[in-house]
Image 1 (cartoon, rainbow over the protein chains, first blue to last red):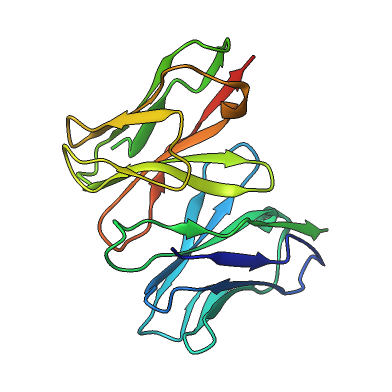
Image 2: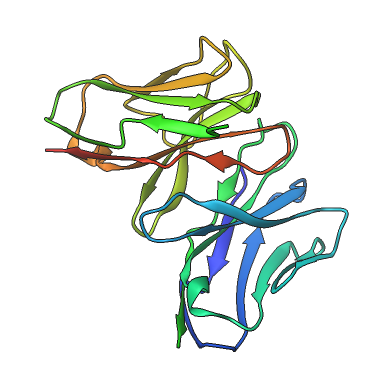
Length: 113
Length: 111
């Protein structure tokens, strides 16, 4: 099955700086890559996603890039704010898997005011 | 429009007791999932369903059973709880090849 690795496991940045979280996947058939943000004690919430026919997608301060050849995708957060502090999870899924998401182990992002 | 609702939110069980977690969604999603979340291990899939009357095993199915008798409900059962099943359980639902909507979670402690 699919194996998703996520790095780093923890990340601290100064407010206003950028943050980058990287994930790799193993199944070349994977075609959908969502990112989730989970605040302490809350449920994971979808913040952005990308499909395999697109190389980059942006939504205000967040963007995701996908490199199918290298089988990796990244989350970029610009102009970070304290409310961006949370755990971020990447995931991947491929056809014929019942839309199973294989999640990375998470990145705990701390934005220092 | 409630989205995905999980009950209960908290539960303490003694080893060997049984319980059922209920997940209900009102978005007419075909797919439903049960995950457990443990510190440092991310989200691991227990069981999932691709439609009413169907279930399938995920990554960590041992010790759990599920049923999906109605499209909007997905039940997770623990027949004989063990301390290793102490975790936060999340239900989720989705359309095919789209993002999940998660429930608010159930924090289960087995003593």
